[in-house]
Image 1 (cartoon, rainbow, N blue to C red):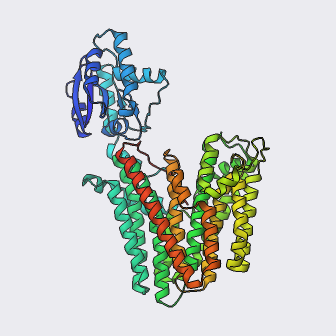
Image 2 (image 1 turned 90 degrees about the vertical axis):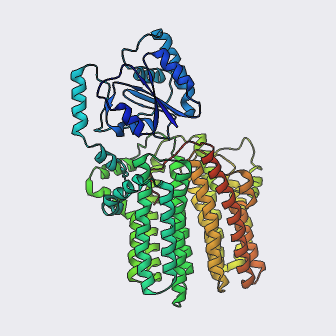
Length: 601
């Protein structure tokens, strides 16, 4: 339940009371500041409370944006201020001061606006939504009221609400082929009481059915799979638009949306591989390669963003050139399309599935993603090398968490002298050398080369942690380690040359990748990295890599396949149980709602 306290003298013919009730508020009225303070104290501390001037004139959606968004402890618009439980204490203090200032007399000017001013003076962060053409005002006289009412009538509240449900920045395919109608689907869902999480789940189920259709290996199944994959993407867009349309943001919802996107795509890869196998074509190596490449691309995005989370604006020549290109309309869309974001990527996969073969689909996906990864990574490297920025301790810790180093690397890192000299490029060079040695020897010599090189890789992984990851290119360390671990599993499974080894490797990499994505989403949601016991219990990247290398060297091909399967099941169970428990507990514990407007490539 939410409570709104109307302050000041009511205005005949005003719709403010019905507007607030339509937004789920229980109403109280206060003639002066002292009465408002008393009513505020009577509202339970675990409920949202709002102070609204009775003379308010504006759109209902302006009130919705200002008073119902769950992401912000304190928020306000002209004539209205609201506080969730986390912001209640600050609101109470500001109210007490205002009551003392006016001495309990009748409120003449807007009490809500004075409270907002007092909160700003305290340095308290108050969210003020962008209203655009929406009206929110407290008219001082009848003429101003008539003008405000006319301004409200001149703007279509619902049209603005529908438009704002769509991301301000999105891919070309999503912007022009999906959002023009998915926004209406989002409104349809809202009017029937559906939640974003329910739509997200429907999107997952649709994608899993698409994967099952692809697994049939028939042309009809491939066509149905392509159609259903697009349908799943439409629902994927709809859940975010529904969240923005109805302001139904939640910590659990953000996690479900992010993790389900990855689950849908990688499940579809597995479906294509199964379908190809039914037709006599083994493309499991391509499917696993596509998942490895796509995951590494995402880690590049996440690491770069975290490394520069607190950095000052980029004034490098590369950034200036990028800004200049963005000022030319057509280049914006070209640059967004060539990085193959989720909309363009899924559209390409769907079309190729329907009209070609899984092998051709994977070849196109690998080529497109490789080009996109090269383009984006090269640009970020140039920006980092020419940028003068000091990385913060927060950024260094985030990168250290993203490395996913286990007990072996931690033990080696403690051998560093406390007075050791900081070398700016040492971590990325050491990580690159270790990963290169491991992958090259594994490709050339198989299990023998891997088991000989893996201990050195462990040492290199520990050396990376010997200094804070604050160098210009240290954001490359996590994706380098991801490529080394996933690539080693891929190569060893392929060289085992036994039926079932690559699907088992696909399952292991999928389980580990889930853990890495989960780490990212916790950091981005300010929830911190997964607990140390979890990382240690599944070995860290260097421990898992060493274990897989040893298993490949000691076991027969058939035994290695069984070992990979068992390892995949164990890792999946451990990380899934802990992750689901964490996110459900965070949701039930009232963690701040989050909503990610970004779109990973």
